[in-house]
Length: 455
Length: 83
Image (cartoon, rainbow over the protein chains, first blue to last red):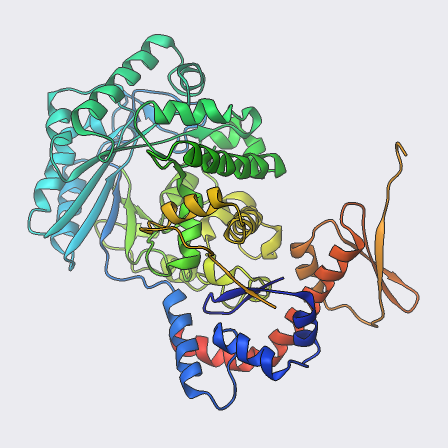
């Protein structure tokens, strides 16, 4: 049975020890080993108390100054995917790009950033339809020492202006690759010629820049789960080792056209688990490269490396409108990209302000009053609480409320299954498993064990 | 035998089963059904073994005891860290 402390220390215990723990009848030896693993603090142990408080503090997410912006310079797009999460508008529509006043306000926002580093993600619509706006933002960030820009693009068209942006060393490319050409055509492009154009452009940017500058994500339809090796091969063939297995998001057009994805069922979780195991097998068979499922790796690192990851969908507390915001095509500010999608779907208005007057608003404060799982009665009894997070917007999206018992939410079920898998693999004796876990944790070697067993 | 459903069951000799404990049991093993019976409760599952039901119940009881025993100390530390 797994024992986990508030600070995320953990160990596997045999039933007799747990029975003694339950009966408040621990032996001196029990107390010694549990103390040694950080799972018990004796009354006369002030150092242990400080270590405990420090460990808990390490686990608590720290939202610093604003340094991560998701910018939507246009809502227009040259594709029309059935599960488009933002309900994009047609390429020739008008009134869906930043106007001069919005651009000026965004540039003022950048001027006011009090940080040594910034990450800006350009979302859409298709942001490369407005390379001039992207260029203006990037130029304005020159004063900030450490800069990273990610252009999230469907790579359907690359003209000279866009190529000049891609050529910058501080610009990275994020795109979608749903699997083989037939799957990509069915889910996104609609025809072979458009798919061929995308694949040619993907090959072009990979050849020009290499895989470290280009990332891709598949959107997976849980009702038509793809062949695992086919999906992996479609990434590996492009030299991309990371696959973020992402089910259709219950947002935008997908709410109407793929309503079944509100609740992901056991079939999805089984698929994800089998996918991770397949990657482990392939990594063991061919050690010249390390394939990984990105979200599993994020969860794994949440166990071993508190604070090392800044994945804002999985942290606790998870305050909104503090260290990252989304600025939409009309200048409205949202706490997350999903909140923008939800508002655009007409479900609930989750804007917390706008780029003209700011977002230190009552709306933001009301959301942030519920930004932690630390005092949730269900989470407090969950072994995975130190590693898990809180996502108000996900709950609002699926249920229209944030007060369901946690274990009745998709967020909880998904992460329970995820951390069940994480700990099953942590305690696996299979050398192939340990090899992949070590690589996914970015360790130089492979430990003989990842978790302690108490007798 | 085809069509036969085997149900594993353990009896719990307690008067009241707190809602929190029921939630935790559902999280640890959703296949376990709780039924009030004379003298306590019965925990039944069509897919889990008798041993696994017992392990799940032990986890729930241990959790309950530890949560109660450490509630005030945890609250103080968290309140300080989150303030």
